[in-house]
Image (cartoon, helix red, strand yellow):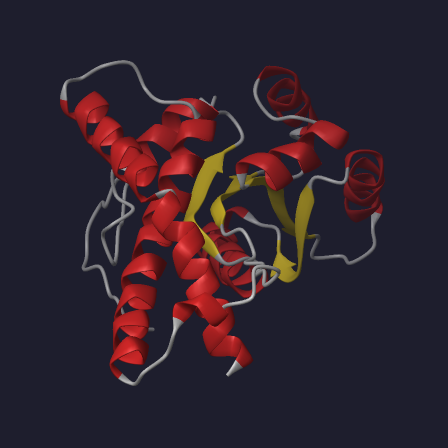
Length: 232
């Protein structure tokens, strides 16, 4: 009964903001449809939240209508009831790098990837996770591995695939390992892979991804050959 009452309270709160949600969604469609400048990541996250809340509102409205048919009086709902939902990550971006590319990584940190507290802020406030992705040396714990460990201790911005050997012929497997790691560790709308010689415009990327939020499966990028499989 308490859970039902809490749900009705949430429905009331969501109903109050329904018009704002509809306005934001229409604004996104208008701006993207007319070729205007890309919306910011903040705006993109608002759109995501609005669409998620709109879906929840539809479900709660059905539950509320059903409860009213059974004689439930919504005035008994507790005004102090609150629900807390975990904010979903917009995107996990893996920057594929390798040994001997520290200059590239430092250039990325200076150009578009935040460092230190700003990197954590990007994750907490904008829902975007950015990490360098690298495997391990064939000679485990050698100087190459130690250099990466030291760099990661300084910056805390690596995904180190401990079971993945770092070698040119292992790149396809490395990308697959990164995607598996990302899916296992973060519940995100999108998972992206870029190389360590690419400049990423975070706002533009967020706006582009927002155009595909309502699609169940999306692959964006260059497909050289072969089929896209939706099942493992």
